[in-house]
Every structure is written in C-alpha cells, then in structure tokens.
Image (cartoon, rainbow, N blue to C red; front, side, top):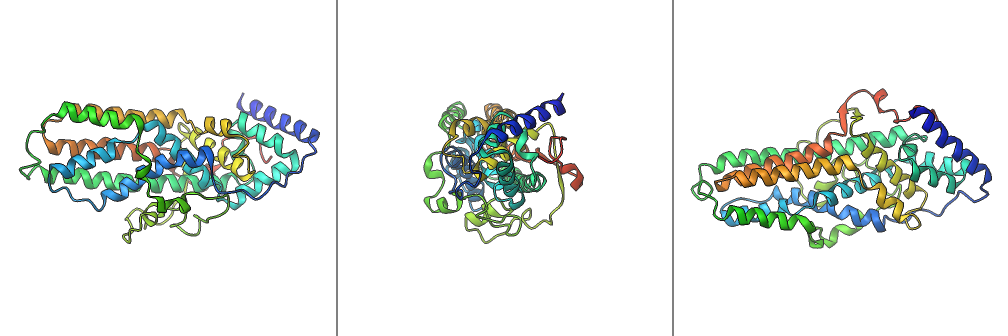
Length: 347
C-alpha cells in the first residue's frame, strides 16, 4: 500500500508538472523567516540553557532555584516544533538535496513539487540528495542529543555530591508551590530574552548558506551550540569521530517533516506557504515524547523531599529524557540503512 501511495503521488506530480508552464528557477532563498524562524527560537533557548548550565555553580538554594526555573520553563510542544524547524534549516544546507529538489521543480514544475511536498511529507526525502540530507539530520540530532545527555550526567553526579552539603540535604520548603511555579513557567515557554539578540544572525540562515558537513561549528554542525554560546570548551561529544546512522523508523516522521520543510525553503516557498509549513513543524511523536518527559519531571518533583532531589529530577527528566527524545531518531548503522523512506526510486 505504501508503494502504491508513493506511485500515485509521483504520478500526480508528473501530470501537474506537464500542465505547468511556470519557470522553476525561483529566486535565491532568503534567510529563514516566519514559522521556521519563530519556532526555532524555542529550541535555541533550550540549547542555550544547556550551554549556560556548564558554567553555573550550585552553591546555595538560590542557585538551585535558578536552575530549576531555567530547565522548567520550556514548553514541550514549542520545543518539539523548534527542533523540527532547526532540523529543516539544517537539511537545507545539503547541496545534493537542495539541487535534487530544484531539479525536480525544473522537471515537474515548481507548483507541482510544492503541492506534493505539502500533501505527502515523505515525498521530499525521496528526491535526489535525500540520503545526504538524512545523514546530515541524523548526525545533527545525535550530536545535539549527546550534549544534553552529557549535561544530564553531570547533574546526576552533582545530585550525589549535594547530598553531603547541609543546605542541599535540607528538606525543600514549599515543594508544592515550587512545582506549581514550574508548571506555570512551562505554559508560556521560555521568554524571548532566553535567546540573546547577538545569536540572531547565526540563527537566520538561508538554504546553502552554511556547511555543517565541513564545519562542525556551523549551523547544524556537531559543535554549533557550543560555538554559538562562545564557549572555548569543546564537549567530549563534539570531539567524537563521525559514524554512520540509520533512521529509527518509529520516529522517522520527524526526519520526513524536516526534509519537507527544507525542500520548501530550497524553493523559496516559506512566505507563500506559511500554513503548510506550520503544520509540517508539528511532529506528534516528538511532541508526545517531550511532553512525557515534562510529566515525569513534574511527578519526580512532586515526590522530592530534599533540595538535592530536585537536582536529580532535573538531570533525569529536564535533561536526559529530552536528549533521548531527540537522539532516538538515529540508530547506529550502515550507510545502506540511510535510504529514503520511499522505495519508488529516483523522482
């Protein structure tokens, strides 16, 4: 049934393309704006908070409250959309993929290809260059996940250390009010000030404006968030050698949606197709995974009695669970497993 659906989509694209006389040579894409750029802020805010945690020292209860607020303030639905937006702009840096999308538009007609992308998110990744875009997305997701999990490990160890400090080993006063504060913060998500204004130029990228496959500190690269925060320290995860990844097909829809939005960016369709892009940014499995991590954070905090136990809750559910939700799209594997989700061949 899947092959039939793919064949049908391709056939309709061909028919629409044959009837279209429009020029496929669209203007050079502008930096990401609208839905993509707006959604990206939520993910940038979370990754910036992870960067900030590296430099923070928990010396007293005030410091701990600040970290609780910092990690608890992220709305998980917004975070999921932001991650898909980041992945989309990352995939749009793949030369092979962007060229494949534009070649398809030149052959079938730009409007026909845009229509196919918006009605079938799996279509874009099946175009020429889809494997390269997939590889870039999986490497980026693995690196982003690993830096979050690395911070989770630090805070888990810190929670054990804090047990030996009198202020942290004391009963946490007003825990119920603390939990409600975090719930309230998460409703609206991180404020605009959570992303420094100085980051804006490096977060607003056009298709093919960076090269994450060559420069790990470029947008979408393994060291991007470290480089963005200006931290000289290179995390252990950023320094790891590259390896091949394959899609975890239970989470493959997120990769399809990223590629679909990237394809629209490559065709400079962001301004004219904002509603469709907004819909593509909503990946149900990613949202559900991140919302479950938030629920577990709330449950953990509701059971916490001592101050240091809140640190453990943040490590386990404010960090590790989030990192795993992002990293679960990628599994170790061979290059052959990076094939697009469709099996209909080159379009």
